[in-house]
Length: 263
Length: 334
Image (cartoon, rainbow over all chains, first blue to last red; front, side):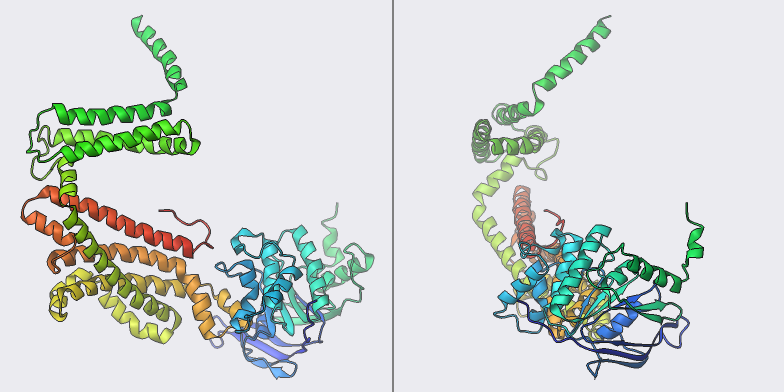
């Protein structure tokens, strides 16, 4: 049905990002971060706020420039935003003046290749389960539906990498879990590389091939963890819980600390 | 004893009155007030010079007939009934005002002639002088449309360019800051000399007032567009032209429309003053001319026409906005 996109390899090498260098408000958001993202893999950037995970994602998107170090997609240096690196924010940021289907079609429209592609737009509406909502405006749909539309809007360009910045952060717990499953299905069917920012440990374990655990001040990747679990993953499986404990320990929320809260 | 009895009686009477449903009595009150208005006219002697009041009385008969028909029809059609009940309190208020006004002017001269002519006299002017009034309204409308369109056609692009380009904003801001706040009408002495005809001078004045309001609002509209929209646009492959025309412009439209309402009220002022001082046509000129002859009933008639015309123009712009901004939640209704 949907044509498979060519997955991209993202290489992040020794990237440092300093905001407002040389001023009082100088801030080192990222300090010599390196990460190799294999084509077609799903990698989460996990950490508390202020660890630079969103900054790293924005650097890959090309919305910020690194102070030093290099970022490449399939060997080509990332210089600015490009439709081959699709982005989904925590806020769906659908264009309120466009209908759901017009929003999803934006990528094709912006590149001037929308003419005669109605079938393709329909395909992506179906992919995210928004059939029947093509002609409504964003304020008329729920948060989950809006986020699905944002996902379809990013995917319609066949990005080599799909960048997601806490895309489920604003949703309620139930919608969130359902959306996690849907994101996985879409990612598997599309075969794109996925880079996913979250501060939810369970979400990271549920979704990812590998988790880059990040710590703040300055932002660094503290550890890169393989998730050797088959999909679909059960959130209550002992291996899942073992993964969670391992990550909690990295963040110093070890069992000893937690014991005092028992009973 | 009798006092307490009275209170008891009133307490009993109130719920009974309510059970009759006050709302269903209101149309009868309206018709009574209409009858009173006609009686006042026919029976009481005129103190002010009356002029021709037959048009007025005829009009009242026609309106009374229409209202009575509406009332009768409303007992068969539910939607008409709801509208009747909604409109009747206002109609009653208007009728009370008309009765009072006629008594205070025509029938007693407490509000003295000629400054306070009776409604019947003003209506008489609307009937007898409708050709000149209509022509004046058309002249005003032409001036308004030309001036507003020119002002908006320059103001919106100017504002958008200021919101979009730092450099353009740098050069434009001083001009906007110094020229903008000067009321358009203050330019009249210069403009009347600078333009070949007083008509184009007036178009320029209306356009100038419109331009400032439209520029300011378009500027702030574009400058306040959420940056995230542009970021999404860029990651979707949008170039600068797409970002400007398909993202910045639609995102700024709600504020641009607010600007257009501001611009309209400014251009109404510019229009009337320009017509009073320069062009020898239009409603502003008509008022000035009637004032010169102390024909105050004509002044009032022109004010009524002006009110209807300008209100119609505003309604039209609201209508356009509602069509363009269907996507917006919670629009203000006019």
